[in-house]
Image 1 (cartoon, rainbow, N blue to C red):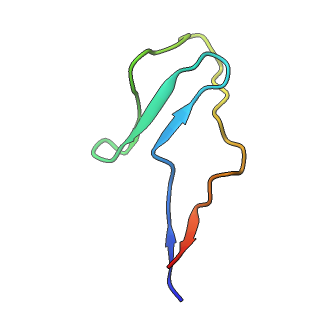
Image 2: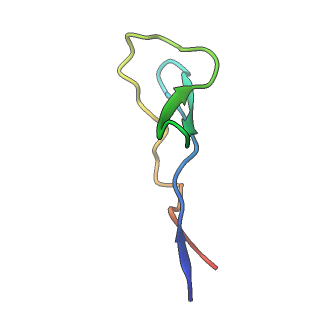
Amino acid sequence: MNAELRKPTERTCENCGREEVWDDDADTWRVADDPGNVYCIHEWDINGSFLPVENE
């Protein structure tokens, strides 16, 4: 049985709506479109529903 470790590729701030996507080339998160409130202490939509291990 093989398992593959996955990582999220997008996230959204629950406070200001800022959306970010993962940039593999830069190995960091990038703002998708609207930067949202730049002074917001971002609360990312991490709720436990994302499963990082996927069984094949």
